[in-house]
Length: 507
Image (cartoon, helix red, strand yellow):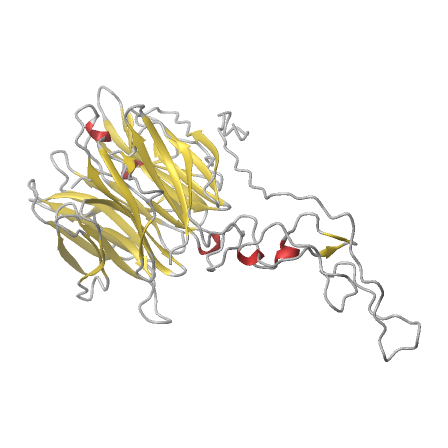
C-alpha cells in the first residue's frame, strides 16, 4: 500500500544560505524623575539616639522597612504582572520593568506551560502560528522529515526532482538557514528522505533513482553535523542498490545509537521481499543484507523498523492485495544482528490505516519502554485513531480518540516527558472545477494531549487550504513543555506552498 499523503550568512561548502530572523522585544516607558524617599529614616528603639538603622539597600525593590519608598506601577498590569511596582536597582527605579519588578514567573515571550500569563498580555499559555518557510513544491510524507538537534531542529525534504533541501530551525521553530545538499552524482529524482540520530550525530538517509538509459535505485547515508552540514562527501555512502523498482525503505538507530538497521522492500512487479542489514553510523556494514520476510501472493509496502530497549529491532511491513481489502500488518522482533527473536505476529487493519511504530512509555513505574503501533481507521462517520500495545502478548486495538467526519489524513505522534502526544489534519475535498484537484482540499489541525484532551488548533474559524500530498504533521517537544508542530498549506491561484509552524501547550 502506498500512502497518498505523507541569507543568515554562512555557506555550506560554498552554497548560500537563506535565513529569517525573529526579533522579539517588549515595550518601553520613560523613567521617573527620581526616587521618592521617606521624609526621614527609621530609628531603631534599641540603638543609641541619633544613630539610624536600616538606611536602605541599593537593589531593594522598596518595602515598608527598606528605607526606600514603594516604586511607581509597572507598564504591564495583566497576568503575573498585576500589581507590580518598579524595583529599586542600583540607586534608581527600573525605567522599564523587568523580571526584577514583575517576579520570577515573568517572561518577555511566553514559553512555559504553567497555566500563568507569563508575558502579561492577557493570554495564558497562548498558541503561536507562523509561516516557517516557503517551499518549492508539496513533498509527501516519504520525502519530508524532521529531527531535534542541538539548539533547534533540522528538516529535510526533496525539492520535487533531484535535489534535497535542508532547513535549520531554532527551538522556537524560527527558520535560521536553508541549503541544498550538493550531490556529485545528480539523480533523476529523490524518492525518500529521512533523518535519524546516531551516537555520532544526525544522519540523513535517502533513496534516489539514477541513470536515464538503465535506471537503478540506491539507498545512501550522509553524516551531518548539528547544523545540518555534511561531514565528508555530501553524497554519502551507498547502502544498497537494485534495478529500478519502487523501493520502500526505512532506517532506525539502536537505542545506544551505535548501529543502524536498514530495511527495504524489493520486487519488480510488486514488492515481494523485505531485505535488511545493519551498519555503523558511518555506513560500514555490520551484518550483511539478507531477506527478512517473503510473500508469494501479497504486495509488501510501508516497511518500517524501530530500535528496541534491549538493543534489538522491530520490523513491520504491510501486506496488501491488489484490491482495497483489509491490510495485514506483519511484525517480527530481531536481535542486534537482525536475526529473528520469538514468533511473528500478524494484525489486520482497514485499508489505508497507515500503521506506524513508536516506542511508548512503560505501563508500570520502573518498567521499560515498549513498542506500540498507532493507526487510523479512516472510514465511516466517526473515524478513529487507535493504539495497540503489548504487540507480542496478544495486545488488542484500543481507541485513542474519535475524529471529525472527513478524510482523517496522516498523523504526527511523539512520546514526550508527559506521555503520548498526537496531532492530525481532518481534510475535506472542495468541489471546484477551476481548481487543480490536488489543491481542492481544506482542513483543520487537531491535537490530543497525553491526558486525552482533544483541541482544535486551527488558527481561526475558517479551514486551512491544503494539498492532497502534504497532509502530514511533524510533532516535537519544545523547551518549557511546549509542543511544536510543522505542517504545510498550499494554494492553487496563486500557486504557493508554505511550511507552517505551531507552538502550543497541550492541556
